[in-house]
Image 1: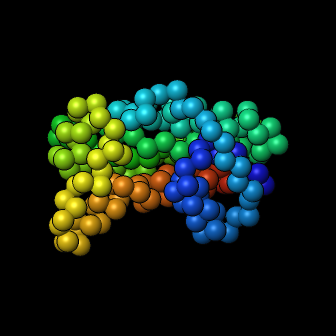
Image 2: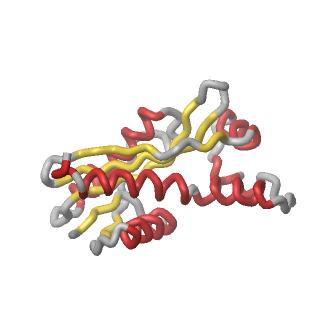
Length: 170
């Protein structure tokens, strides 16, 4: 099996490899540069899913020998309390015509991060500044989750791959 992945992000590729290993799937991963065609910080579920689908489509077009394209997009969504949640959407575009997307759980962002996004600044430029001198375990966990987004990426990627691998069971 060959998977064209619409990213060259070291972390996203590591997380994908971890998911494949946990699913006991042997696959060749071919990372490619792929434009999401949405904002670099998508601010809605729709834009995040669109970016994920666009990355999967472009990856599949670039790697014609792939079985499917995979797109992974992290985005933000205004929650019912007026704050912002961070989440991930992963999409598969199959050569066989089967297309699907899955969204991870949502992580409410602390005020620090919401203010950066509200100023239209790139969260990645400031994310390591959040309570960097606070040694409380839960603060460190939140910092790590927001910096690397592992839990969100793994969840969405695992679920979309399961949907793809089990498509004939539905």
